[in-house]
Length: 232
Image 1 (tube, rainbow, N blue to C red):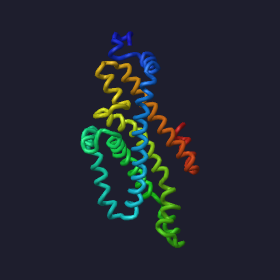
Image 2: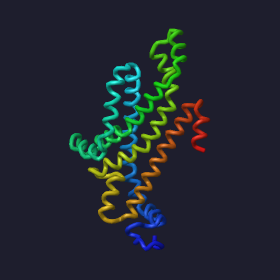
Image 3: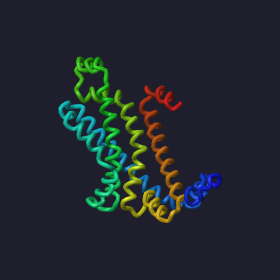
Image 4: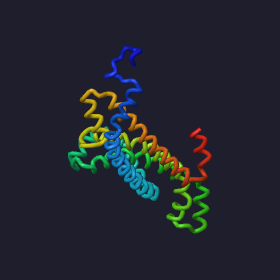
């Protein structure tokens, strides 16, 4: 940034950030593992809860009308407030960080799954009902497969949120993790190290999204053409 007269300590050049990332790669790797573990555990828990919630709400229209507004209202609570309160309630270990990731990732997955479940062709449902299929058989063989594209759309959104939520949870109180690393380096005015951590966060988020896309490609062969069009 010498061209614009900006001091390197304030806004380092991309080359300096890359060099710093290589210099502190062991430290970044140590903190990245902690953040990735929190994100994966929270992401996995949110998927399980979303599947259960989707199944329950899809089976009862009145329950869906009662709980859906609560789900929306839950998203109006600022994330930083949860990051400050949950450690006070559950301690400063791994659990509050996993809970924060879960709360952030749960909503997009659930909403996209419910939208997919409600967009099923009514003629298919009537056909299965006329053939004597049970509600569970209809859900397993018709509704859920048809809802999978929407479900994976929610997964891809939540995959990017998971790393961010884990980092924010570490800002408030942690002994390791990229959020903790960034807080320490920010106080030392080591902006190049902060930006190196940001680059790692972007890479981890991208890898998680690509992993979800790979699983989607393998599990939904009938949707591959639309996936390829989106990627191109």
